[in-house]
Amino acid sequence: MKRIILYAILWLCLYTTSAFAQVSVGDQGEFSGLVYSDYYWMAQHHNDDIEGKNGFWFRRIYATYEHGLSNGFSTRLRLEMNSSGDFQSDSEMIPNVKDAYLKWQNENHQFLVGISGSPLFGTTEDVWSYRSIQKAPQDLYDFGSSRDFGLSFKGEFGNNEAFNYHLFLGNGNSNKPEIDKGKKVSLALSYNFTGNIVIEGYGDYHSRTNNPDSYTAQIFGGYKSEQLNAGLLYSSQYRESELGNPSQDLDLVSVFTNFTINEDISGYIRADHLFDGYPNGGDNSYIPFAENVESTFIVGGLDISLSDQVHLMPNIESIIYGENLQENIPDTDIIPRLTLFYEF
Image (cartoon, rainbow, N blue to C red):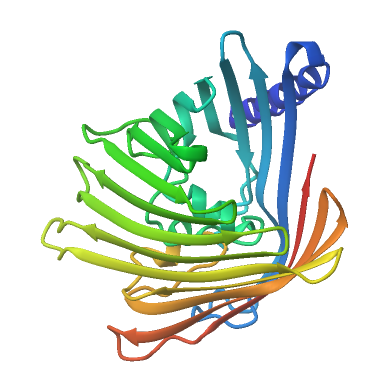
């Protein structure tokens, strides 16, 4: 039965792709996609079961269809597939819904209903510009999900539309179904000092029935130009106590930059420091962290442009561990990778 369902999903994807390809410009429909793929080598890792493992995987495959409707309405459907990344499973890739929303937009404001991007790290990721290499810091450390199901309000106002806002009222359960009575409200407010410099404040409250409530506050400053991007982030999250377990305060600092070297080559480097242990960090896909220990994540590499839509990116990720609640400090993780990114 599972195999029949898988074949049906694959047939539907192929049929849908073919149908999208036949949509005319007059229908205002657009099909696009992107792929992040690596050859990785766990050259050194604190977990002996993982150390030495190497191979190819897809960290992300997107297939996106967007269609304009009348009277300011439009819609998007995005499917995502990826390799498991847990160094244990050998299951085949199964598509899941990443975006599914109806949007209404006038000149300066948008209203979205459905599954769409949350405001937690949209601006950070935009300035970082290398999601193909690694998630935004808040995403990497599980401060929140990139998606939520609910109502989203976005827009700009003020002189030269310098102020931007993004308010989200959602389930707080990413793109999964709602399973409790709690909800999540989040708000990001940013100000563009110039066309290059932006500062953003963010806060959220996540109420959950079966898990501890959490509160997040952060501030981000970024600079973006054709030759140089740079960002500085401080994010703090408080998680209430649960079933006798103490409450948690997580503090995260990140600094990053990317820069043009010549017409075809760019560089990037980033450092994140989590001052507290990473809860459930061992379950992090593609790059498991040691838990109950301070960590500094560092990534750097080159971006070689083979064409406007194809990029080859050699890079090295590393995690250096500091103060520990255990007896021994875990070994440093070192992960050389060759990343291929392409879009269509």
